[in-house]
Length: 136
Picture 1 (cartoon, rainbow, N blue to C red):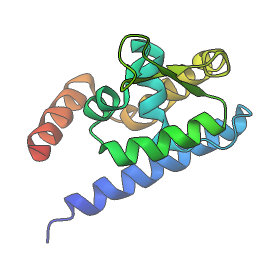
Picture 2: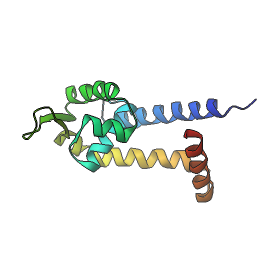
Picture 3: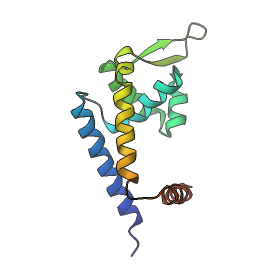
């Protein structure tokens, strides 16, 4: 009996627990691992539309809207209407989120270390290639 999906699920759960622990240890409350993709995207790409964010992080627009609403309530992002087209709303990172960028990077590096510490560079490359194939 193959247990690939079970292993992937357990790795995902362990990764999420690790992220939450690291956030709490660094005094960041109220964030969930699901917020990470949005924050990372905005920190490195600047203001974007909901559609751009949804496409880049491979989530539906309604899911992104819910996540953005939570991030906005916590002061990590803000919305800004386009001056050229009132139908367009941009999502921007706030100073509060920028302040935590080094912490987010540290958590990401720690997570990657945890996931790959028992693998060689070659094994990591092979694993990522195989997981990419599975995803397709």
